[in-house]
Amino acid sequence: MNVTPAPTRSPIGAILMAVVGLAGFLGAVYVGCSAFLKSKPIYRDAVAIALADPLVAETLGAPVEEGFFLNGAIESDGMDSRATYLTRLDGARRSGTLRIRGFSDGDVWHVAEMTLEAGDDRLHYAPGAGFRRAGEPPNPSPSEPTAMIARTWHGVVRTEDADAYHAYLLETGVPDYRATPGNEGVYVLRRTDGDRTHFLLLTLWTSYDAIRAFAGDDVERARYYPEDRQYLLELEPNVTHYEVLEHP
Image 1: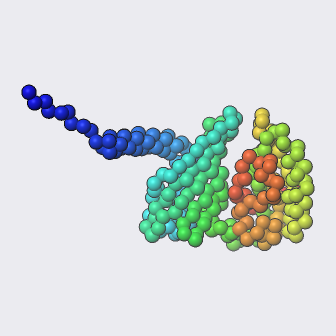
Image 2: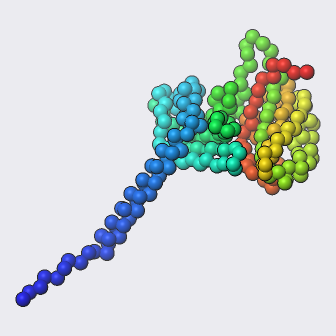
Image 3: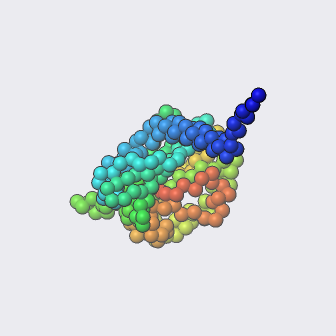
């Protein structure tokens, strides 16, 4: 009686099947996570703002469409939530990488800032000002003289470090602000939420040239000092500028 031996499975084939199965599983997890992150209002609102901005269309070439989602994260300390995203925008001429940062106070999300990078071009977005090329100040109203400019910077430290960081500010940034020609005032604001303390620095300036003397050519970039990393939970990259309509 002849017995036909059972076919043996190739170890290489088994490995390939395992690899394909793992890749399929990871792909499904990525798609699920991406769908969750992209469903958040902060992401939808930020991408809609970017797609409608004329400078973005000029930089990438119209029409501009949402491209391949890269990654994102949402963090919460129980009181405030913060979101960061990295995604692509595809234009008629080229593509760019859009970085989004936002925060929520309760159930309402806000776009804090965005940066679009495409080749050598770098665009910054600030609420109320739209996208501008890096280092390019907003255009003043043609019918009015240039108004005083308010510059705001935000940072967060542990509440236990708040007094020490305040003292550090009084030794570094605050005197440097005041010593810069064209500075018209410095306000240091503080708000404590549990184990986190928020600092908001509001400075007043006579012109963007005066701000450049303090911050450098890219006025949208925040300026930091060596020991800031010891206190701040995050080095927020950009600041925001406002036109001052009324002041004492």
